[in-house]
Image 1: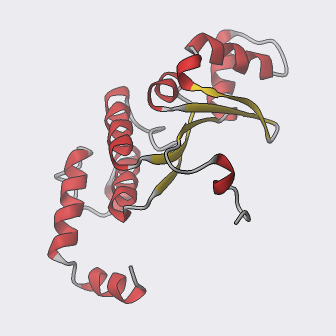
Image 2 (image 1 turned 180 degrees about the vertical axis):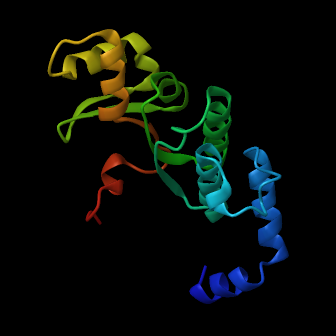
Length: 174
């Protein structure tokens, strides 16, 4: 949409846009928050609001970095389900192994900027991913410390690719 459309819609929102946004916010459990400023919302509510914004844009491809990191398990499931319903193609960075396996078609693990794992999600188990993660750690540690390192330092990419190839989303490629 044009800048002019966006500017006029900011000043006087169109009924169709208000209806669409209200429905999306209700899907994400934010139906009573549409009149609040984003800064007044909790971290999880802000994250769900950002998801609603992405859904409203109706792009063909979603690229998201940890869209559920500030959410509890039920809300994370709700958001991931909603994203998968609206986006046939998505590149989502997740640190939650179970959700990556549940919603992803491919799992890509990155180590030192290189692809170190690229496999169909249905061919992997949570144990496979934990072994992959443990093999990347530079030093032995307690399981609790490992978990901290895993969720801070490792990106598991959950890919749901429909009509695009991995190469077509690289910057600078035609």
